[in-house]
Length: 539
Image (cartoon, rainbow, N blue to C red):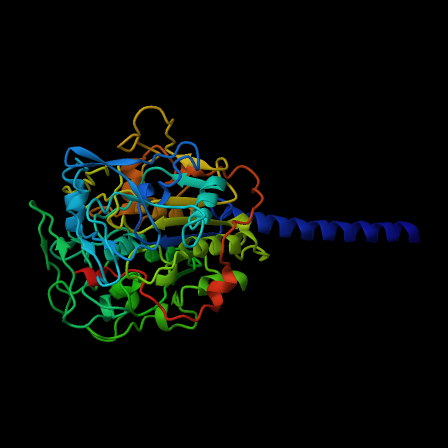
């Protein structure tokens, strides 16, 4: 009898243990299934000012299927692309008007119409002609040697997009607004300012306050919504001068905050309150400036117990190591590890900087839900074309609302590297070219046409559930880039960038990306902070 009682107690204990394990397993499965994918983190790494032809053209066979040109058009003729070092001492103008000159109504023949910025004429020699027709040389004789090696390895092991376009047709300020909020419009209302687009660079010197913290005299030019689409100081925020670059409309943060609990986020910038690449500082409802002009950001994103807008940029590496990376991260560089050419202080460290982030995730020992290789996707893009030639014409015709955006969408190609444990295949090329005949000069259509809205739309889908997106940024009257890319560019696909991923397979094994510099170098770096983008000096 005692034996039977013992057996019964043992059986009960086993049942309790099994039940407990079942609850744990179910709760764990539920935690995973609250999202559409196994992903719990997305990192958007933003580099500076390159096109695919320029950055990857030194080795057009680094991955089968890439679409890179060796010659470009120039007013009816052809100009060979010639090698330049990564760290050129000059920069090519890339304002909205420079886009217009190079694009030339779709002829793609006006690259030599762009100006050249030479910050040190006494020591910097600029080629006499055909400056934009160049690719970055990458061999053992460059300084540093094999400077682009980390980028090539990332593309070879993970994913490369042939047809990623910057959504806007101008430089960094508006590009970062699109990457954060899906538009560079000043404000949704009144007077249909959602039909206007911030187009240029607010005049400012190194690390000067820009956006909602800028001085009274600061302004940005906006593209008006009617032909001939002139630039003007259209929008005037309350208490400020015409064109003051402090805007008030939805961003992706409104979407991330719509969940319970809210999706966590951070924006990593070298200088939090300065620099026109820190997009949240240009948003009234996030910055909450202390005064209409010339103040500081007082919003919780800046002053709360756990700020969302943080610096220096290398904090992203320590956050990964300390297992506190938020669910969505935007990462911008210091100038010395930016890919920006001319005057930005670049040393060719950009590829190592990006590899450090990839390797930090790939080799992370953090346990989910903290960021690790099995639950994180890394999207690496460049904010604008930097004035460098690219042979693929952008699709024109945003056609939202009453033609909204047709005057400012799209810009030229920029690279996009996609890193995940769930790639469709190693070295996947989105929109792969078969290598026969002339390289295609237009996008082949969905699902291979991508832009900054693709990144936003992907994030919305990742953190949705039951095959539904979290939602989109803007109202129906104004289609922000995240909804436009899904509803019009690729309507038959569940989410943007879907051709890169297969979430039904087990995660792949990570292989470290070789790079000259590692995370420890960037974390310990004590040099003077550099503006990652010196475009304001060119105004």
